[in-house]
Amino acid sequence: MRPNSEYIFSKSGLKSRNRTFLAAMTNKQSHEDGVLSEAEITWLTRRAKDGFGVITTAASHVSEHGKGWNGEMGVWDDSHIPGLTKMATQLRENNSISLVQIFHGGMKAPSELNFRIPVCPSEMKDNEGKIVARELELSEINDLIHDFTNAALRCERAGFDGIEIHGAHSYLISQFLGVKTNRRNDQYGGSIENRFRFLKEIIISIREVVSKNFLISVRISPKINTIGISLEDSLEVTKMLTEMEIDMFHLSCWDVFDKSTSGTNLTKLFRPFVPQSIAYISTGAIWTATDARWLIEQGADFVGVARVAIAHPDWARGIELENYEPKRPPFTEKELLEADLSQVFVDYMKNWKGFVL
Image (cartoon, rainbow, N blue to C red; front, top):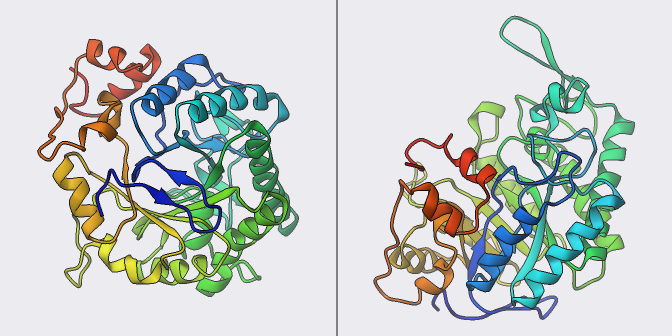
């Protein structure tokens, strides 16, 4: 099996032309009301034209007040559907499977953007004792599940092949999974089964209303010490997730070459918990064709990449060459603009140390 071989999703029969997966990336190119900009559509369409098998949009907030940063695309209102439809159409016409990543910032949805105090499974205070996020009421949790569900329906109406539920990187779903951010004593807190309940109910609710061939991917982090998610917790979450009606499991490693305390790399460690009927994506620090082949050898079905695709939109084709080693950062503004990043995206990249000259 090689990264350029086809993959057929077992439940839907949908076919990916290869095993390359463009992971969601913040790019700040959307309008402030969440409507997609032409720049964001152009950025992803270029990577579809250049060969990526599966393409994921940037994270998009499912609730009006769940926004995590400026320039973030939205899926919380029907006014977003025309832009989503245009993007989905262009990705399909260029033979890529398309996913919208849906999320809520939770305590990472700043008040200066959302004009209200952030929410979290449990109340959170800063080092000085000031409340920085309030605890969600049960009725609000139910409303949020509906928000995720309605967002998925909009994505299907727009013509996307599926959605990716963002349960990684310390956003709201992660906050439910973490023992430091979830200290609830009701059905959504305590045991890992209870802390998983919010994500579980989102998946059930979405699957009940979308078509059977609509893809559902779930992305999680292997561990997040700052909010209290252990590796053991994530392995238990993986077991429960893969018993549900999902199509893809996405492990967000940051660096796939890191090893667990047992000495096994994370991709290989999680592989036994993901059945063959579910596509397994692993993402983090892949750059060369050799890296991509190695990741497949560790058990991944798809090679997830992000940063390498910023300056190399044709990376998915490049790795067909045995010794492909694309240029590494730093890149010039001219190189990035020629790769169909907007000036807004390029300026954002300047915040990444050593990425832009």
